[in-house]
Image 1: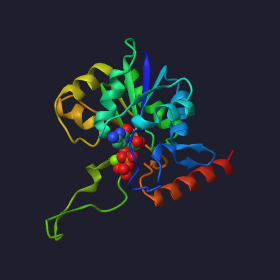
Image 2 (image 1 turned 120 degrees about the vertical axis):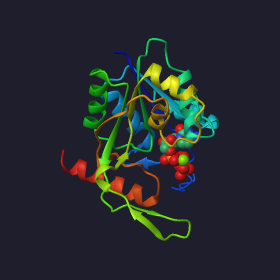
Image 3 (image 1 turned 90 degrees about the horizontal axis):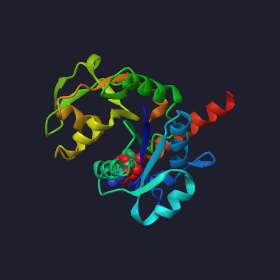
Image 4 (image 1 turned 60 degrees about the vertical axis):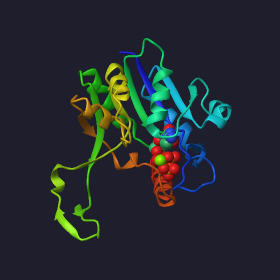
Length: 222
Ligand code: CTP
Ligand code: MG
């Protein structure tokens, strides 16, 4: 199995509001980009491809020596498609990872890889929901309470047979918020493995504070 990690890092990070693309924001002494790439390398992937804002290709490449850095697109889906086009021919399995999930524990990456090794076409790390979930109408009134037991929040890295991911991205579905949704649209089974709260996506300033706390706790425990 020849594996690639594609790290989606071409977003601007509007909601974080750091004034620089989110992947360049620091957590401890490294950027989210560097931390994410390091986890993928530690997992033993053969190739790392990073999608970056087109005006910052050189700056991103300097941060992650050895990775192939390509320009992303307007949406995350466009960025992943651009990254797919840059994969070497011999890659047969792809992990698609959000740079913003920089603290994903190595065990989560290993669980995704081993599901692929066991033959899964597509696999996503998931966690159960802590909050009760309700469906509301346009005016905000509750329509019903959703049965939480069958719901999961989905994280990255999401792992795919390359051929499946390529077909999914060629399928013409737009505005999917993750890659697995495109695969689901093909009717291909997406399996799940246990994710981790530590794989949170740094989206808002509060998420960054939580991530700093996770990092501090890890450092205190080594
Ligand atoms: N991403 C990307 N290309 C885009 C948009 C997003 O590669 N056109 C990446 C981001 O860099 C991030 C991941 O996809 O690592 C998840 O997206 P999100 O958390 O929404 O990041 P941003 O789009 O940067 O943040 P925001 O939506 O707040 O602007
Ligand atoms: Mg976004």
